Image (cartoon, rainbow, N blue to C red; front, side):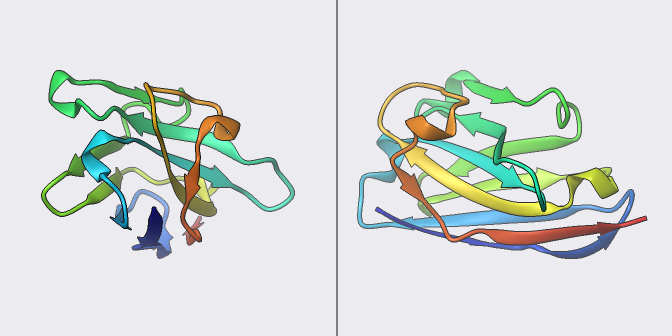
Length: 124
């Protein structure tokens, strides 16, 4: 499975961005998908995940983004999205999409497939 993330950029604090991650080469609808991020000098951290059965509302969020970020997926387009609102400077990071076979999981080591990352910079 190949994952291609896009949509990053420079935005002012309080602004919004939508990240996209397009998948190819696998059965996208059967994968749990997640977003992780890595800020400069920090370890990669979990952001959000959505199960393969998203219509059942199976999502999880990191406390730091809950209420501001929304993960969604379009299985017809083999794409997962991360809508980011009310962005803060501390959201600045490289954002990675990832996929796994299995249920919801917040551990990056449990994801099998990774995209190349897209940089989000939030200015104060």
